[in-house]
Length: 464
Image 1 (cartoon, rainbow, N blue to C red):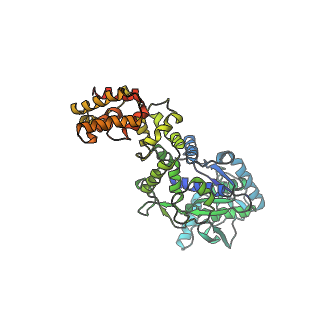
Image 2: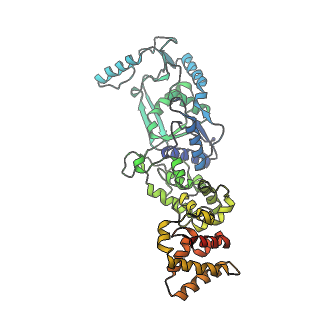
Image 3: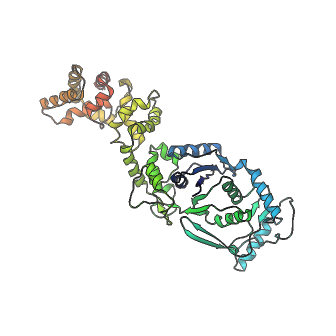
């Protein structure tokens, strides 16, 4: 098998959304499975809506998802001369021609065809006029007058389109710019793309692109059109279904592999397996088992994946991922190494990286800066509660060895001496040293912040 080369070609008119992210993931996995190349092309010909900030955001989202690309980025706006070079060759070979029909005249042709119950299309009146370049003129492809365009789609199987359904499409507009279908064909050929995986909203473009390939005598890539992603109600996916851009999920504190795992299951399967490491996906994704029917995105399922990977991701990776959220809270001196030992205390309780960062932050505050939950203070740091805190504080201060066993002994012995429920003592102590009602075990928390900080926080709690 020759080297497989795939591509992802986003338009920088907005952020990367999950439909595009899934397409990129499928293209990336196919290339990595076969040891091929995954290329990235920025289709920025819509100069009014395309922005560099969106290009940067798309690239950042790709990196966050772990989808690295091979070679240099290709920008369509830098290739206009190449597109027109190819169009000129098609004019010379007779596979394209100049057309002087105005948009109004073309629309009149289409209306006439509609009135006859025929396919509304350009009628080809300039095909044999032998026109040259001129103001307001476009270049059109001279398609065959009969026959069918056929291809075997990786997802949808055999597809055939009669050329009578098509017309002599424009290749170069009157302003000298190539059309989308022309640019895409030249790009994919020049980049050596062997497999084109994209959304099935492009199925109607494929016969047109194949006719351009054939006119140029170029080899066709393999096409695969994946169905759109739907909401849980089986309607077109939108924000009301919980669909968001990749960067929004990142900012919400989701783990990148949770989103990857969720997306890959929207249109691809390997038996009943739900959870995949990235290496498993590379090993298993061979371009088969792509579903031809639309899949529904379930935000709750995404959260389920996220909860799983919060508990399964190696501590060093989790520390790297949560660090930006901790630094956003003002702990700019925090490092991956300094927070990695703290991650286990909160990973079981957190639903996302924001919650994990909130928990770890409780360990990083200095006593004077620790925020306190007002309701927790009002409920537990009463006069009675403060008395419990003071006794525990003095006994902890007197410990010759500040270890888990000694801390547990101090707390449990005091509770037993009072004959009260454990929480009556533990909760005031917890609020005093953590600022909140819930959290990890008290000995583990105290050991994480150290003896001096524990005592300082208890002293502050007694002043509230």
